[in-house]
Image (cartoon, rainbow, N blue to C red; front, top):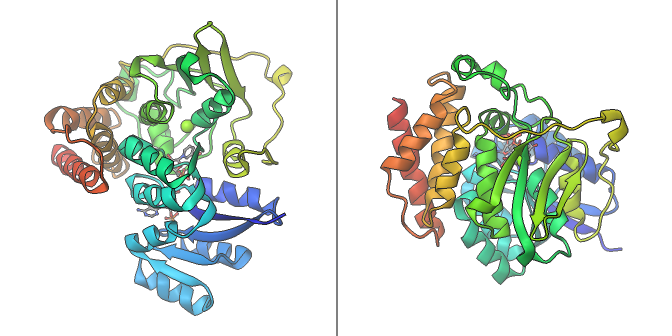
Length: 382
Ligand code: NDP
Ligand code: MG
């Protein structure tokens, strides 16, 4: 059987590292094509030694020099143009596991050049859902989501009548502050926000999970990916993160996908698609777990969910602005410049005071909204 080629952008991150674990178990099935890293040179050098990729994308010319000296036979691409060039190389699978809006140009380039776009970078769909979907359609690229909730929904919908979808129900662990009072949440520190009860993830998405901005992004991601109306997307708090999401159909039946909370399931599903292969994930033993809990989310303590609905009701660049404002607010919280609850205040101000009506039909228009939202958010922080 021919080896499949796979490119991994963000190979040094949490998703990238989990993907490499899967490749180790399938050493005769996949050949690493293009990889990218941003700051973690130690990990990148180790990965390169172990996997001998064809091409490496890095951010600076200093990193380029180090790699050229150590690996004279590997092609090195540099900077944001290098990333786009790397993502434009033909490949069977492109796993986009870069964090933030920086991942968008990669998804757009992969849309014409990869057979499968395994999409962890949810920001691509939040900022430019329609553009990305239409590029994928033109390029014959299949998007397979890597976000666990969207992977669950994607799996549930295989072979189903999509016109019979009544509701998409995204599950949410509720994060570390699920049961905290609003007063207590005013004093949340960085350490508290970095303690996710179930999932082991990169720092940024871990804090976004604590504020439920991650769920807000996922609501928008689901709307874009599955083409459902804002009011047909619900969030259900489920602290054990065993049910990864559900779909309710017109006949009242609900289908769900379950598993232990381990991202290797969704990653393996996407890279083996349309087949299934090993993921290395532990087996789920429901008898041992015994009971699963559910509750409705609290939009007062987690205003990100309310803000997401407003974004979903827009038809302009609201998604790009929302994500960019959130990224700056998150930077502000991580740097200790604003409190935990202020993140949502800042994002709301940016959404209310900016004009986001331009149609998000090209990368320059989307980038303009992204830049303006960042500028406004920085002004509100200072
Ligand atoms: P990490 O922070 O662990 O890793 C991010 C990766 O992106 C690293 O390889 C990093 O390089 C690279 N990177 C960071 N900034 C830039 C930049 N400006 N330009 C180019 N590369 C950059 O993130 P995660 O793996 O947690 O998340 C990746 C994506 O997957 C996010 O969109 C997240 O929302 C999504 N996701 C993650 C889940 C998880 O379990 N982690 C679950 C569901 C979705 P370096 O380390 O070398 O600096
Ligand atoms: Mg998720």
